[in-house]
Length: 143
Image 1 (cartoon, rainbow, N blue to C red):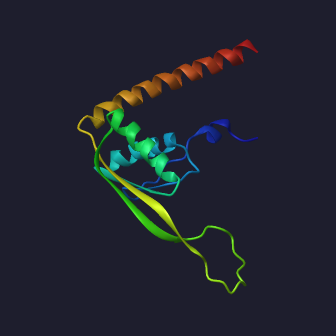
Image 2: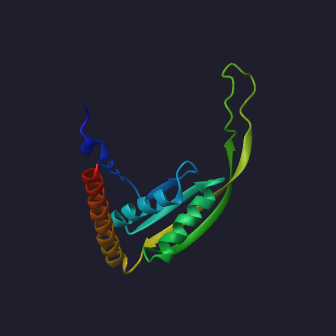
Image 3: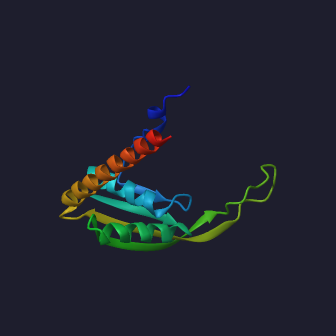
């Protein structure tokens, strides 16, 4: 039988740089959390988004700015050529097709009151975790 506590411990994020590549496979809440962790380590960060992921990047950046964790430094748009994403037959004699995609780079810097906001966030998170633990024990006791 597996240890339940080991299964519930979150993975430790490994942050090696201040650049975050945004994807449509994760929601904006994930990137807000990742940006907060990155801003704890670095003074600024750059969100790179390609194609449809640009909207996820903008939403995450806007949430960080509205909640006082970061300030905008710059927003840059580019049009780049990438290989078409379809799976191709490796034996095919046709070269991969190049298509144009929108690329967005959002540069944010840590806000002046970042530390205070993170302290408040961690206090609220701790209260919520304690409340959830109390609710869980109450449910198990009722069984």
